[in-house]
Length: 369
Image 1 (cartoon, rainbow, N blue to C red):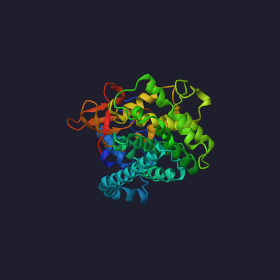
Image 2: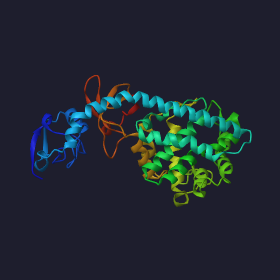
Image 3: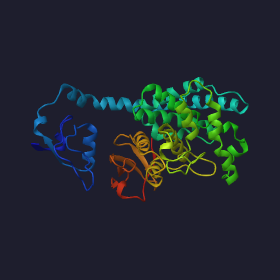
């Protein structure tokens, strides 16, 4: 490809990068044939790249749309930033309403009232749709949870994450609805577990954990006669604690005996549980948990499902502010395609650039909203 070297400040929105650009990285910070956006320019500036190879074929061809983007992008970004807190607040309100509604249903189940699948479906789907519109919510979802009414917080979050993973895997809308509802109802059987065990404020004994394990059976029994859930969703609820390596429960199933729908709920369930505050342990970083699920727990979960969740949680714009595990504040300047949990960051205090992919002792603790 024929190209010329342009000064970074002269590179135009819509120009085409002619060569892969490396800066002491295994992967290029910007790939060949990339159409330049404002975010790409910010990344190049962060790496102090002065000259950029730009395709000659493209350099004199800038569309009206690209000119419009160049002139208006700042205004659009400012509007998005001004709406960010409002959008979070709106989601938070919707989320808390859903938690309260679910908890009322859960309390009724404890007394023997039957599960109303239609009502529960209407609780979770608006949240799935909103989260997919405001994707930063996925990196903040565990922050909405609390130890009070934990079973409701967890169920709502698993429903949201299950539906979002299904969307990411490009399932058709009816199936997304079914999977989100199944995720929401996966722990419905907890209503039949002795509350003294379920709400215990210290680690469970072996016998107590055996009682907790029965919730998958109770959940299945609660929904097995509902005509509103497909049989494969009922199976997914029953199997959501099974693991591909046979280490799960209730039956210790392996590999092909575990449905993909079960795996979607399983990944959503374990991710939210590990990133949520509990009385007997602190919550873990979303980024660290994703890394553990993908690497340390390799072989337990379907990798396609895991990668779908990773892409949801780590879909953060360049310049997103984060807190690191050592307490330092930083901003994301480049996200590795093969390891988005460990992006390149720039420390806010010193401007020092760190590639987290090469510094395993450090990780992102939280996203600063």
